[in-house]
Image (cartoon, rainbow, N blue to C red; front, top):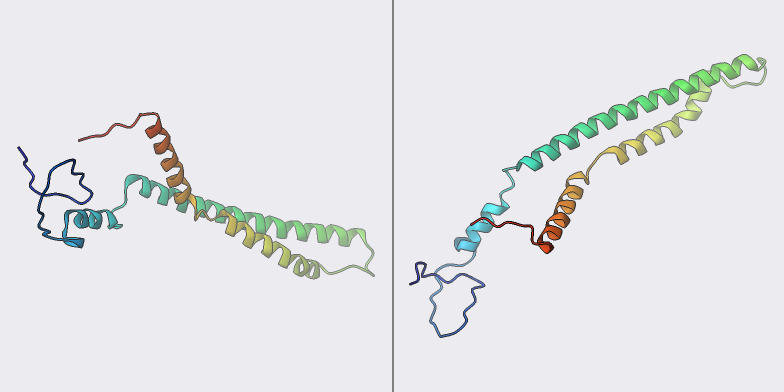
Length: 148
């Protein structure tokens, strides 16, 4: 005996004949209601929350590291300039400020490159792809349990 009189989309009929009355389509159908629930991005899973926090922590730490590297490079430029000035006689050397301004564009360029590389925009995508491959491998090995 059939308890559910409705035929769903993609149903497989093996034999017989039937007349069907379409009650609803699109967003009002069972499939439409289910897909609408799945499209709701306001609810984050625990993994999404953890990845978001991890990404923001990683970004903060990398920005701090970039600033430290920039400050160290500029300090090294000042120290090298003062040591060079002490070794040379006063006739043919650049000033400390002149050397810093010469090294500044190179150091700023390195700083910007480090920031662009350090921001983990692709971190959630990378983890999702790796999880998808893991699930596919588990499926091929029949290690996925389905709950009903």
